[in-house]
Image (cartoon, rainbow, N blue to C red; front, side, top):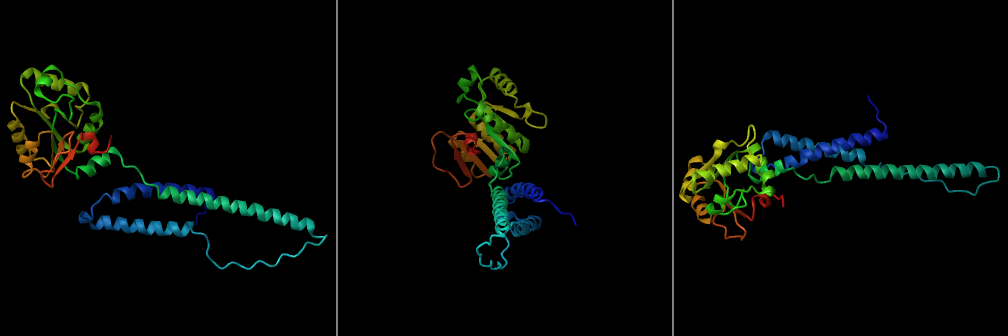
Amino acid sequence: MVYYSKQELVQLIKKFGAYLNFKFSNLFSISLENLDSRSAGALAGLAVAIFFTWRLLRPPSGPQRRQPKRQGPTPSSSGVSTHSNANLISSGVFLSSEDSRAQNVVDEFFQPVKPTLGQLVRQKLSEGRKVTCQLLGVIFEESSPEELQKQATVRSSVLEVLLEITKYCDLYLMERVLDDETEKKVLLALEDAGVFTPGGLVKDKVLFCSTEIGRTSFVRQLEPDWHIDTNHDIVSQLARFIKYQLHISPIRPERTAPNVFCSPSLEQFFGCV
């Protein structure tokens, strides 16, 4: 049998607590409806681990032996009594210190872990694998095709979220443009921002059309799990056909359907602002 010192045991419990914290956040992100036998076993294992950790850290609860009455020290034993009292005091301080360290381990064990952006993306998108997204007003600062003719500016605050989506989802970007020069301007702006990555978004997945109806047609053909758009009419028309939609609008509109969510920006929807 391997024996550990108290310091090594505390460090071991800390590492074990951090590992369970990570598992804790992942397990409870699973909906009860989708809980399978493997996940149920993981939950049972977590419960057992918590129980034994509690047993390990719990102070002994056995009956305390009654302390004999303290009698006045005799002159011959005064030195021994003083030394014994000093040992008792120092022992009490040591035990208090160990109790405090154990409490710190428990506090760290139950400290909530902030989810990563990748975890937030997957949770918010309900593990959706295909996403279509409008460019104007969502990815770009510009909000109209006329403004896009002059310049194309990728919003810096949305870039991190956009890149995270491309890691987990098949993403298609789309926009209505007025001429071929605007298409080139859009692709160049996305490339300069670093949106095109190996294994992620490619230029062929940036789609252009000349009408709003064309964007609606793109979405219908691609059949994504999520569509992100600023146009209320398009969102309303697609509500019957697309599983989930995110309507980006600075003013919170009335919710058109249960599967349509609203947010002032894409990054705010994921809690990044």
